[in-house]
Image 1: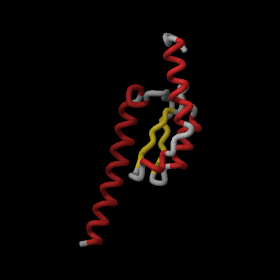
Image 2: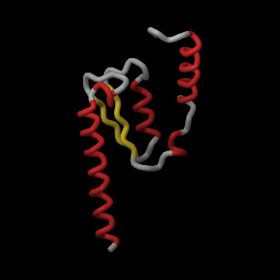
Image 3: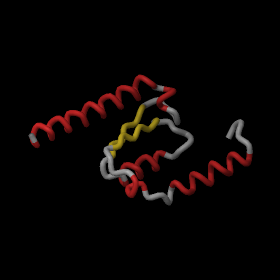
Image 4: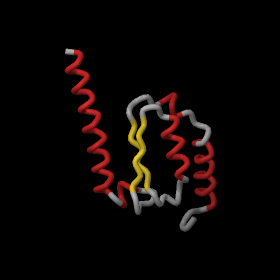
Amino acid sequence: MIGVSPGEKFAMLDMMSKINNFKYEIMVKQKTLIIWGENDQIIDDKLAVRLHCELPNAIIRQIPDCGHIPHVEKPTAVSKLITEFVQAECKKIDKQEFILS
């Protein structure tokens, strides 16, 4: 890694090793949007797939030609995905309230 000290690299690798053993489904039950850069060279895309599988209410969206920080590299695409996600969830809530009324 360029510009990273051995101590920083060790700390990051230690943190990353713990991610693989973490039980996400225990903590997150809400609807979740996972946004992933197609060309992320920092974290393997298998983690995104794993998150998607372990979070029962998650959807995953991948941004083409994008690396590890989609909100910086492709802010318009990220904003669009978040807006679509929130609008879809709001429509579901509106329908549920209508049915319950």
